[in-house]
Image (cartoon, rainbow, N blue to C red; front, side, top):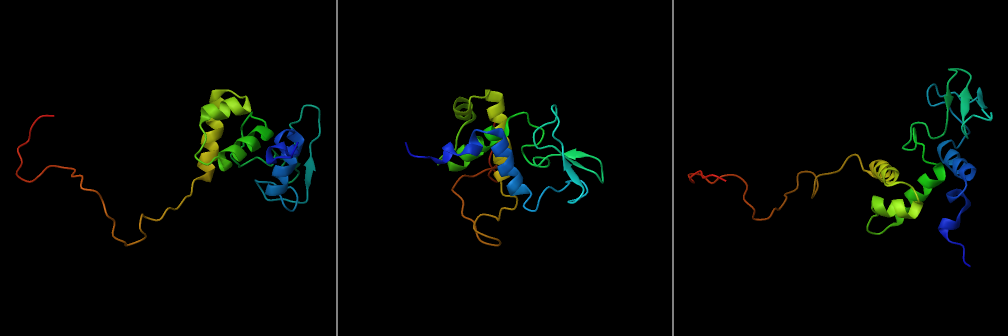
Length: 155
């Protein structure tokens, strides 16, 4: 059987998914999102501590690699987030929340939440006007409004 992209380990293991996300977000090691500290940071490895939790010993606040991203404040596992991102980015004509719900095995509400957050992150912020700045734009023959001197009727 051939190895596919979706058979990658980070799509099915939470620790591997976290390692991938940390490698992308923190290229030079963990950094506090509040104060920017890089040196006085410790990993929290308690039994009840969330996977990947770090603590800044300057501002004394805990943080994770997902803080400030679209994955923040989400109870959905990171490997499910990665699968959803892959499916949304590689589908040619888009993918519905219903299809995500069936493929990923999560609730429809969670699939809707995932797809909307991912699409919002993919949205381009500044969009140039159609045709470019200062260019003429052609429209169809639809007339909107009322013609001068026409009788006003109901409806």
